[in-house]
Image (spheres, one colour):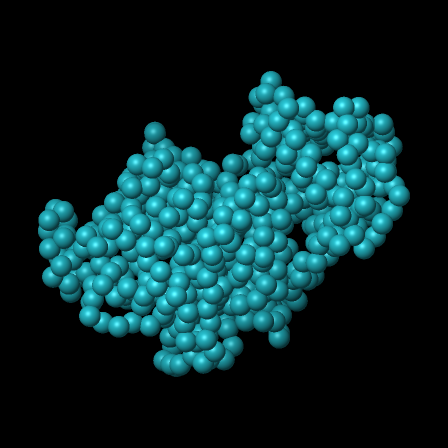
Length: 542
């Protein structure tokens, strides 16, 4: 089979592509012309290409490469673009500056993969683009990756690199899971112990197997009767400057950073720092060293509402994203059922049972966000449990997405069987441990789930999809690479283009892997698992 031209190996695949003969040559004399609104995209083009190619690509009113914003191109929407590469000129057009940013990433992929090397190890006098005609726009507006920095902390430099990779694949959301039972990573000036205490745990649980599910994945990894942890302290927290810097870097690439602050459950780290926020204010807790679902949850007294407002106020100051994630799932209600204060709050709010405090507290937090012009998001364990006005991330079953849509919720598809990249991608002997459960291989991610269909009028919208990287089994940056790639390439292709034929995708991915190699991505091998491989995988004993 003949090798693919570079425009035939684009990932994600463009909406429309017409091959042309010939090539455009970039050299030291190549300049860039912009119209108003295109300057940021031109700057990005230089910042991405000049270090690797050595070409200055200066601005010029007579440049051979033209970047232009034309609001009349309404059919392209906010992120679409048109790209024409001829033998003597390159024209990149979009209706919105964000569309130009997507087109810049396509131009990068049209160059030889050496042009992606960040250190400029290969210098040439001339670089060639194949002549081509592309019209491209996304299938869905939300295309993302969630990285859990609570279970294992990953620093700002690591996240910046992943933002760069998201942009290359036309993914536009980095969802940061900032807090959980095992660590609180975001500073809040009014509550300094959240990071001085809540960001540090004494060790990490021995992982010895479990069932399927979500964070710790309902399997409560390490909870099969064996106690103890590895005895190695683990901690880390961002500064405010770290986070605002990430937001600015992402915005320059057309990526939105969506923060997540867990509540009412998954809050053990916060309660270790401030016991008075819990249901047993006199009890001293540690930051949890185990995985799974912890019984300690926020109380529902007025001090907790003050805490929620203060934290969310700081979150909104740091993150300008229109969406703020509130966690919201896996919240045991035992403490509320046993607490006189919680039972009194339930009665005062007209709730038939203390379990209703889950929706009540989420509703109060969501209302606070909406008062400030933001949209609340939460994990949806069913399609019916979230308060009105929430965007639902349906992860347990595809049917829950349809139920949520029918109730008027917008939905981001996050089914754990097709988007959770902490599961093993094959069953090779000797591979590093992964989240216990069924294998989620490359083809499974590429196939995805059928589009949910709402059964009622006035339904919500499917905003898109995203992959999840829970980090119980990803303590290092190399682990993030290995778990994310190449499976995230499959999700990116589906999220931007819609369904594509498997043979077409795998041919493009084989070529795209050279780009990943040039960027230093330590990805999982592309070769398929052996036919006798089992379909489930468990973590070995520590």
